[in-house]
Amino acid sequence: MRRFLRTVFLIDLIEGLWVTFRTQHPRNICTDQYPRERPKIAERFRGAPRLNNHPETGETLCIACNLCAIACPEALIVVSSERNEKTKRKELTDFTYDLSRCMFCGLCEDACPVDALELTQDFEIASYTRDGLIWDRKMLEEGPRPARYKF
Amino acid sequence: MAQTFLDSTELVLNMGPQHPSTHGVLRVILKLDGEKVTGTECVVGYLHRGVEKIAENRTYAQFAPYVDRMDYVASVSNGLGYCLAVEKLLNVEAPPRAQVVRVILTELNRIASHLIWLGTHALDLGAITPLFYVMREREDILNIYEKYCGARLTTHAFRIGGLQYDLYDGFEEEVKRFCDIIGPRVDEYEELLTGNRIWIARLTNVGVLNAEDCKAYGVTGPLLRAAGVKWDLRKAQPYSGYQHYDFEIPTRANGDSYDRYIVRVQEMRQAVRIVRQALDRIEPGPIMAKVAKVIKPPVGEAYVSIEAPKGELGYFVVSDGSTQPYRVRVRPPSFINLQAVDRMARGSLIADVCAIIGTIDIVLGEVDR
Image 1 (cartoon, one colour):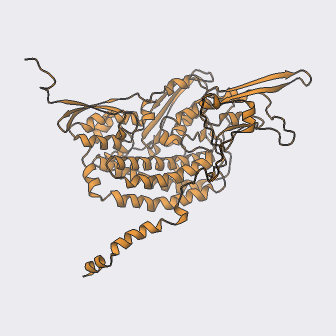
Image 2 (cartoon, helix red, strand yellow):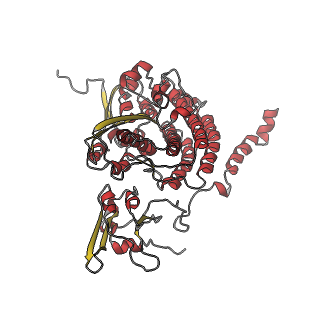
């Protein structure tokens, strides 16, 4: 009799659907509406490299010590520098970072003594060409400019 | 009349390397008599990247990110093994805080690895639902990793001598929350699978490997424990302070695929237990031992093996006194466990080969290195 009533009132079906509806709470939805909403990336995320400038003077923080290039397992960083005759100090001229071979291990930013090189939270670094992945100093200072879409 | 291949009852069938059930690029040559497998031969090497050779022209610190790329499902365990081996060469020990954090992260990694195994193994046998469930839980672990060290899969979480990153704010709460939810979630998987008639029929007495065979083949990890051998390197030769934790080694008697499933599920529960204990043991302190910037170990060699999710993961590092290792040899659990496929698959049906490959829990990145 009980079984009959369960069948008539579709109790099993409702029980099953209750499980389905229970997980419909917006809290349980984890799909990112990607280009519309950019996901929140962890603070320590190791993404696109950036060569930091001094926030006030705008001069590069890099002292061209070459430690990042030595630390890199893939030897993909090339630092070129020039000796300034007036101040007798090395000055950065160009900085090449080959992202196509980078594995984002973070050893270069660990090695940097002045926090000039940093792996940032930018993750949109894809390129249509291989050359586009070899970043020069200008690109490293400005960072990637991913396409923004209008909706 | 000359014998042709048509006269033979033996059929040779090639499985893989693009077969979804071989978990990567494993090629298995099957010798069949009808539906029955009379012999198998594994062809490995499709994912060979020469990691051990790469080690010889990298410095000790530079090689650390590469080990993550061997067993990429359990990259933290790989990092731990390598760091411990080099630390043994240098004769340093990570500070207590670093050791506790290492234990938490490797045990979380064990859960993540077993979750992936559970999902893919069930998928191989036609159960699609568990895969989505395990991915949901694994996501929580990966989010913790991302917040802790900035990467989700190839984490590079540990450094030689300790840790590079200290815990982020809210780490303890997040891990505790995960520990609270994973128990009921594992119950959920068990509800789906443990008593499931199809699951039992597909797994019991499939791929049986008894204790003697396990020892003869050098098989370790859940496969060995499912055969009834109570052998866990965390208990047998504790590292990273595992002797302070109270946990059990789950074992089963039959050594078939179903027992391995039970052992792995139990291991997930034990891992949660260890993580909970480790959370209570976190104490303030340094996270990095005194290690020179340029690591130059004395001439010598060191072998360290740890209990990775898949079995005994060993690192043998030889130093010639320079900044680069003379030789790094890895003892990957998957590669050695994979040898037993022939023993397990002989005499079984062709459909069981998928189950047998799945039950070993191989990662081809580690098999081929």
